[in-house]
Length: 388
Image (cartoon, rainbow, N blue to C red; front, side):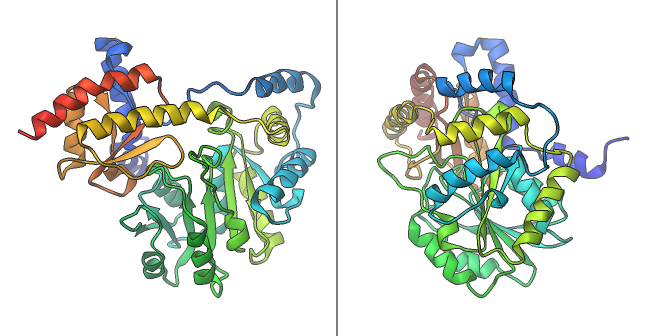
């Protein structure tokens, strides 16, 4: 067998999101796409802003397509630093920015830079399913710190999870899968907790920052937790998921900051990224500078439509304040079994087990409104069947 034992294990226990997505592909081939209600994959379907598409076309014709510094084009990093300084309310220079291959690439770069074998990385559950794989990529161990009953981080649980091996804490707001936006006091308390623990880095995973509803504000982690980094991307806020572009912003309180940034740059190279995609660095910087963003009102309308259907079915869920997910309490104890019942009606959701939080299931609403409306009768039949 040429495949490593570790990878064989990963494939056996691979992401529930991908498993359900693949099942959806099979069902669509059998029943027709219009008869399958696939809420498994967080793949944005809202079109990118027209201005961004124009930039992609124009910049690709005029820019240099050769290698650049591994951290990215200096002018793009300077433009992003100017934008990020205002967004996060802290001074940042181009030297504090490292361009990345999306948020996933950025998280792996940071983990590569900081993780020694058997170091512990805390993630607040529920969390994005890939975090465990990312941590193990670099010899670390993922440690869960369960959220509170309100799906907000529990400082008490984080404190309990901290040991002498703790190297980082990953936070994700707006959160995938719960849709919650962490309030400012969470980061104020986290800053206090870590004030005398400079060895612990807070990694803030923020690809959904601009996807918030009802005038919610996303607080600045960099402002309240000096020993932190922000990782974000154009995947959701500009609907450019396939272009794999993002950036890492390094906070002013990071210990040995020049060495830390040097490690990020080296990790970008030796992980095989070499650098982030050239054209998209320029496009991303220009798009942020000009204030481009997707039409969030489309997602809000879908959220409201979907929550109405869930309410009618008698299902409860975490308050969906941002991102494009609904984290719904399973009406039966086994969330995997509930997803199996939904499959009988060609409805695809992802078990909470995959997010480190069993007893719930995740539905995405980055799908057309016809699909959301279409699932209502089947969802009603499932609930009637379970309530008999």
